[in-house]
Length: 366
Ligand SMILES: N[C@@H](CCC[C@H](N)C(=O)O)C(=O)O
Image (cartoon, rainbow, N blue to C red; front, side):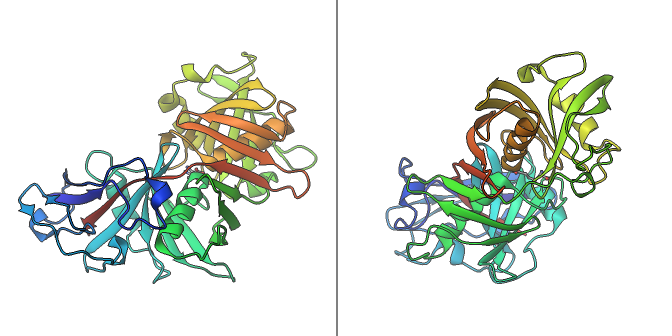
């Protein structure tokens, strides 16, 4: 059994999308992806938004270009077919689904696991659904991790979400809108340079709300607590950005971490599933270059080692400030690139600024 994915390297209409991919030349590519769980390729139709001058190639046939169509690729509604756009924020990659017509996700967590598979599916760290807003917000964002679990929030994901919404809708010059998430109200703003700045709200420090069972300090926060993992005692600070994070800068026996040398695949799961974290945890391993320049690697709950984690970078700056290691405005280097993070004293909100890019457009049978 196999699935076919139609992949476009250029967004289908140019006007609102020009800044997303101005350096790409238009082309279509059809991929065949093996999967035991999907329908035969014969059931798959060519679904990319064709325009004059383009040829669409599939593994079975070459099809002639269709007539010009202004209909957006994503506006197509074929039953049994999921149209998506794959985005990434610093290499943290997501399958974005237009779910604005329903408050029920178009795919199940089990299907998300299959689509996220990097060998047998599209490949992604998660699936994100753009849904109708609730509680007076413009939109709702939900996300499934690549293991099928549902986190409350995703920082890189919400930047991708913002660019996706700008693709889907005429925002009439509006650069900002409100998004309901499991972490509450999140406000992204698309900047002139195409980057997205996000008001990520206030960090949560109360141990029982993070949640962590590590013993809290008098103010209920867990800062520089001792955590035994893999034969070492790690100093950890716990921060929730709606989702839980355990941040570590050192162990009892090492002054500073050298994050490049860490075996995340070995230690990451031991943090994630540690008994002190009843909702599991994301874990950030951090090196301090200067009070405004940090470097981190992350092991994500439900997704493993990823190239970037937006909520993680926010949690890292909060933890670094609480531990007296950094200032409130920092550049955080992640394996996929840098994020600018500010924990603003005036409103206690964390602001994250970084890129979000289209990778390709595609369709898969469900
Ligand atoms: N990569 C995301 C976080 C995604 C959710 C996380 N894996 C969790 O389960 O909490 C980000 O950029 O914040």
